[in-house]
Image (cartoon, rainbow, N blue to C red; front, side, top):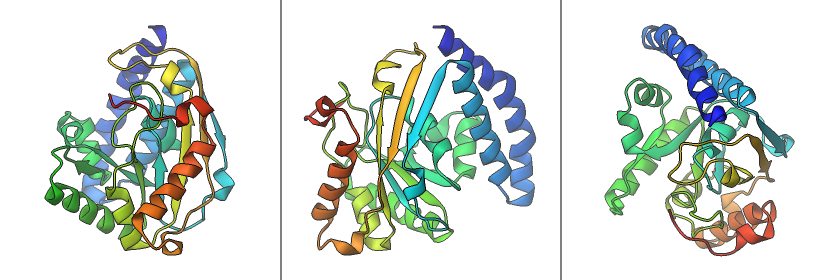
Length: 241
């Protein structure tokens, strides 16, 4: 529980003043980068103080000066704050629409051009999210997506959602498979308790959509790459949260 309180205290002591100072700056200047960088700095510090280490492999494989789509598995609520600060440059991400309604934080997501996603299963909703993502990528930002669409209940890989692969085929942007593990033991589903530990993140070689005839073939290639960086037990079929 100490780790949870440490992270919360760090966000309160540093995150709130940072927001108060830099959100107005972003609104006045139209430049959200200082706010984005400061938020990542607070996140890194919070993890460090809470005893959470992040080990990263494969960063050198990420193409420089190219907007990419980072595609990761998802096993814990700690995955996004562990991964996003390790992505070079600025990234937007697909997030649940409900998160956009959180005071201050939700407004920060909007300024950062994060993309709201509805889980209503409607084709129109998915198309709207993909259209927004295309616009964001046209500005040179990366996109980060957890391709299972939700956390795995037991840490094992789930079927992938099709939306990110529509985006990949439409834009031709390099897909960067990402494997995350370790967080499944650090923050259990339904619990606010966080345990210290080590997060393992591995970036894999870019996969180029134009090399595949169909979205399904691209999806299988990305899945195989992510699975290659996970413990064997996590590559079996899992259950949704």
